[in-house]
Length: 358
Image (cartoon, rainbow, N blue to C red; front, top):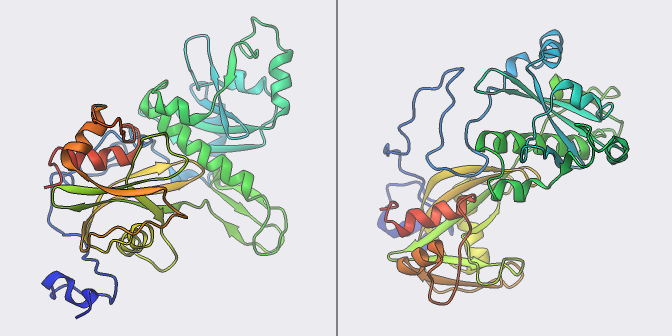
């Protein structure tokens, strides 16, 4: 009998031929016990994963209220995150401060794009502004003791800022939101329907074509990242661009018409030749490079012989629970390593190594 029909003997579940996926259990776990959602109390992720902590109150119902948005923009308490070509600017006088007041932002001239991000825990509004490369000459032209001089302000890529914890987690999340939104505007200046230039609307959360009236909204690309287990071992792979000796969970984009459970099964089969079952959701992570949502999952191996797709992976192999623990804490006998705590892959591996998965 086809394994897609047998499903390891669990025939009571709906099945799809050749894709032995069992959908997640509806049983409540300690990760699903979250406080009730209210306007001022956002749900807290179960793990300290990068870009997920302390989300803003986005006030989406107010985005088309131009008077309200203008009032926030003019409020003295409002702060602005400034970007040049997707790279955030930081005031370096007191470390890495990404928050600019209206006067400081105005010194750089008119922005290319403005996006209202939301209100933070102190009810302070945050906006993201993008500028072109010409702003660098503005910074260099200011006096060295100016608050907006090149010596006082530095453009630093978001990834190392986030990885090294150089700004507080709530601001990392806001910077991630800002980067994704500003990059979307940069890439979608023309209507995909008729090719006409589009205009920003809704406080920066959509674009409208004045020619054909089509509306365009920010896109998020869903990606599954999964840890496949076989008892006391798990499947990890590495790509050529990884740091030497680093292995991670497999990952891939969800395709049109797929559930994330099906994408997990398909990607693991394509990249490592392993068939999976019992797919379970773990946690998710926004990844603003440029704008993905990492959907973390566990799955159980239905077969165990690895066949590596060398176009996708440099290597893939099974690792014992003890090996994974050593990779996480830097004590692996062969010097192998795993992603750092900022990445959702780290938390998938940690849950397996510590037995939290059981």
